[in-house]
Image (cartoon, helix red, strand yellow):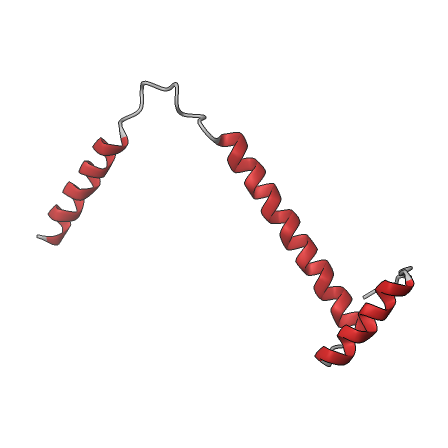
Length: 83
């Protein structure tokens, strides 16, 4: 692990001290936790953006089976496997 200097406002520093006192976690642990949460949020937003970009990408295709046909095919396969 490497060291890094972080500059906080007075109110941020007071909040960090208070959170450390109330949670029993070190200030370092809280900062690492905050960075992990921020990274997870960014990952989630990135996945959502990809899903939004992919929305409707198959809508103009007429060479694909309908969802109903695919479900029926899967149901038939399940019934054949069960017998």
